[in-house]
Amino acid sequence: MNKEVDKNNKFIVSVKNILKTLAFPLLSIIISIFVAVFFVMWAKGYSILQYFSALGDLFGLIYKGGFGNERVTFVTISEVTPLIFTGVANAVAFKCGLFNIGVAGQFILGMLAGAAVGLIPGLNPVIHIILMILAGFIAGGIWGAIPGYLKAKVGTHEVINTIMMNYISMALANFLILRTGFGVAGKSSTPEIQKSAELHRFVAGSGANISIFLAIAVAIFIFWLLWKTTIGYEIRAVGINPHAAEYGGINVSKNIVLAMVLSGAIAGVGGATHVAGVLHNVKDLMALPSYGFDGIAVALLAKSNPIGCVASALLFGTLNSSARTLQLNGIPKEIVYLIQAIIIIFVATDYIVKYFSEKRNKEAIANE
Image (cartoon, rainbow, N blue to C red; front, top):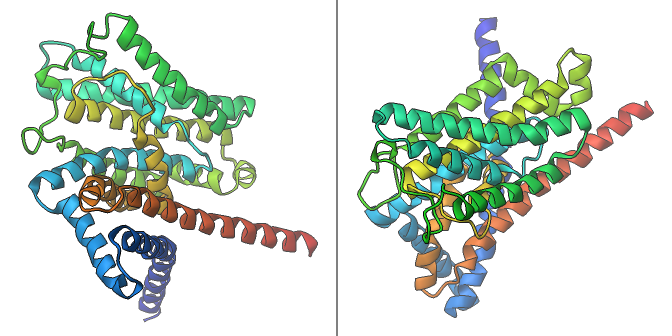
C-alpha cells in the first residue's frame, strides 16, 4: 500500500515539474501572439473591436503558410530539420553552463566536410551517406573542441572564441570555394555531390528529406545521454555548479571540452545532412547560416530539453516558412521575427528571474 502511495506521489511531483517547465515557454508564446495581433490589425486596417478577426487571420495564414498544402508542408519540414540539429547542439552546451555561439560555424564545417566526402565516386549509397554524416560529426566536433579546450585549459570565454570561429569558418569556406580546386570555376560553389550521397527526398523538387528522422533520433538519443547516463549526469552537474561538481570528484575541464565537442558534432551532422538532403553543394557564403542563431532560440524555448527542441523547432520552422504567405496577404513578414523576438525575451526573463532568485538564496545562506 505504501509503495503505491509513493508511486502516486512521485507521479504527481513529476507531472507538476513538467507543468512548471512548460508554463513559461507556453506563456511566452501566448504573449508573443497577443502582441503580434496588434501589428496585424495595424497592417490590415482593423479596428480594436476586430481583434479576434485579426487573430484568426494571423493563425489562419501561419497555418496556410506552414501546412496549407503539400508543397508548403515539405518546405516547413526542410526548415524544421536543421533547426532540430542546431537546437539540440545548443541545448547540450547550455546544460553544461556554456553558451556555444559557434553553432553556425560548426554547421558550416559540417557542410564542407559533407560536401568533400559527397564528391567521392563509386561508393555504395548507404556507406556514402554514413561517411558524410561521420565527416560532419568529426569536423563539427573538432571546431567545437577548440573553444572548449581554450575555455577549460586557458579560461578564455567560449562566447568570444566561438564568435571569432564563426567568421573563421565562413572565411575558410569562401577561400576553399573561390580560391581552390574545391570550387567550380565561375559558379562560386562546390561541385554537385554524387547521387549515391544524396538523401532521399519525400517529393522531387522539395528539400524535405529523411534527415528529419535522423534529427528526431539525435534529439531522443541526447535526451537519453543527458538524463540516463553517467556522462550526462556529469555534464549537467558541471552546468549547475562546477565548483560543487569538482568537489564531488567530477573532472570539470573534461566535461567542458566534451560538451563543446558533442555540441559541435551535432551541428556538424546538421550541416552534412543539409548538404546531402537539400543543397547538394556548398555555395560561397555572404553571411553566416541563420540556423545556428535560430538554434539558440529553439534551445531556450525548449528549456534545453533535447526532445523539447523538436517541438520548438517545429514552431520556429513553421513561422519561417509562413513568412512569404503573410507578406502576400498584406501582413509584413517581420511579424514572424517579432513573434520570435518576444518569445526569446520572455524565456530569457525566466532565466534572469531564476538567476537573481538563486543569488538571493546564496546570500541568505551565507548570512546565516
